[in-house]
Image (cartoon, rainbow, N blue to C red):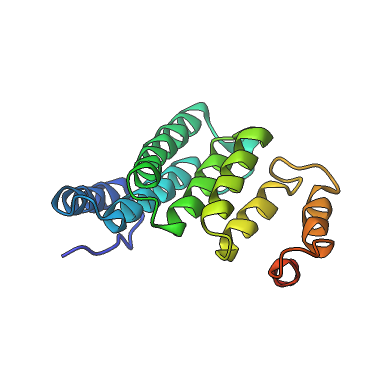
Amino acid sequence: MISPPFAQNDTTIIAFLKQLDHWVSTTKGSPTARVALAGELKEWGWNARGWGYSQTVSPEQWALFEDRLKQSWKQVDYIIRQTNTCPYAFELGLQIGRGLSWDRQKFSEFFLKAIARYPDYDRLYNEMYEYLQPKWFGAPGDTYQFLNTFATNTVDPRAPLIYAKL
């Protein structure tokens, strides 16, 4: 039986990751197990980094964070390349890309690929909005400009709804 780790220590998380690895190996072709593994690896990365400001993170924490996010990305990339049937994989990919400090072009290209495949999956837009905030990789006005693309879009009937949700 798979159960998520409630105690956030490495021993518990590693045991849980082993359960998820087993699930992945016994359900070939299904994205669900890989998505669960990718999500847990991402969270494990953030646990290693900590939740403080970047200047409070040690080099060792940064290294663990990056390694675990890269492991998570391998799972997400596999899901997208093999099945391309899971919108949450794209959301995770955007979260991982933000954590790995993807540049604006790479992040935007992945976002556009994601919304081309899943235009009604609102959380993708939320991830782009988050990326564009100055606390991450945006500059003042970037989020406004992003929102304005939906406010002024008269072709896409979803645009006003996306604007309102963001």
